[in-house]
Image (tube, rainbow, N blue to C red; front, side, top):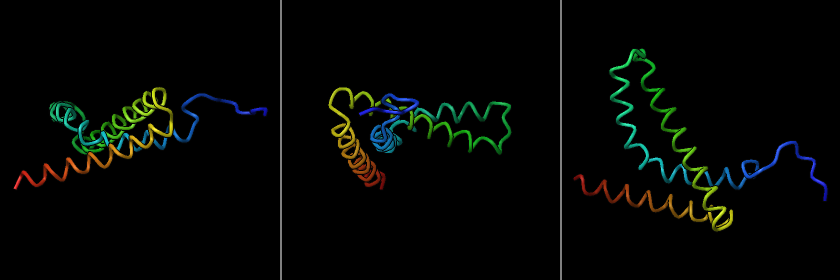
Length: 107
């Protein structure tokens, strides 16, 4: 079969992006902790205060998405794309479980 794709590669595969989004959701909470240093540096910066919140949101989402896609690519290479996406789904469940467990300890 002849492929007429202009661009190819692993990032053109939809399963990589779906798995990457799953991994981004799973890794969002653990990755948001280091962003506290960014938040403290934004307070001391010359950036207007109205842009602090959008900068934090965009940076945290980009960090989670890039880390998620890189994790998906790594696991896709090691396990195959189907297994990597399934593992991402399990990681989302595990993250939710950990968040709920930690919420119970705060009481």
